[in-house]
Image (cartoon, rainbow, N blue to C red; front, side, top):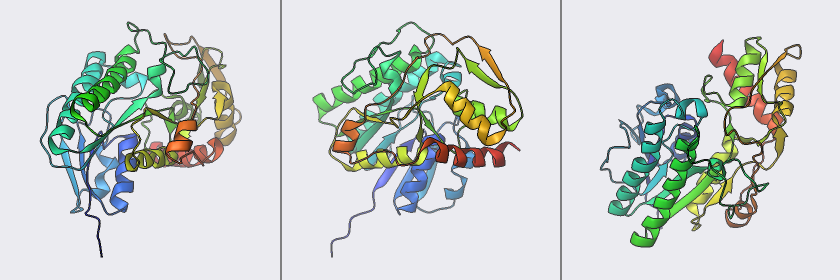
Length: 314
């Protein structure tokens, strides 16, 4: 009987929101996991249940410095992903995207590992094409306050494809659209966590602009399914992973208010600089190449997320 050897997975940013959900799935599948995190936005609590497991290893490390480990697959998720955090130290954010990806690609080359880059819908900037297919090259302000992240992920994608062309590295680039779910940080400034935390505290919900800007929200379990499918297929990408159901921010606010406290007020504030007005993925490639599409609708996903925040902030 042929037995597949256990894969050794390296997850950068593994103590973060997405990374810890991915690690749960890999560990539950019986695989070996090395988690790297510097705890800039990751939390020890997200991975604490695996710390004593023989198949799990944690290394506190900043990926802007090289690291030598023996692995089969690299899931490269490390980078602050919410505007509050990536604008906190924009130079560090750009370094994480460039040097971190450079170091991980160098490692992948040395140990002949597959590498998956968690890129972002932010590479499309404030899009002039709607919804956004992978062929769209984006509209990014290179000198704006968000560009440390937007341009950082664009150069990370560039590095991946140059390493593939020059060194034949097995790369996978997935562009992640707005994702939400348990383990989001309550202070990360993202709209879902903002509204839920404000509503649970009985505070008015803060709407930036007039609330007519749109987003597409993918529940974290769906996102991780897409990520695993991509690693296991031969596709290079880039491939959009997100939920194509589009909602205005006002629709989202009303839905969360209805679920938690229908009597809450709204407070309106000016729209932040370069905040995209529309964001919606075209996911035909994911459906075709990865046999993936999301299955959890916004209402169901919000119920799970609200339940998590009720336990974590009260």
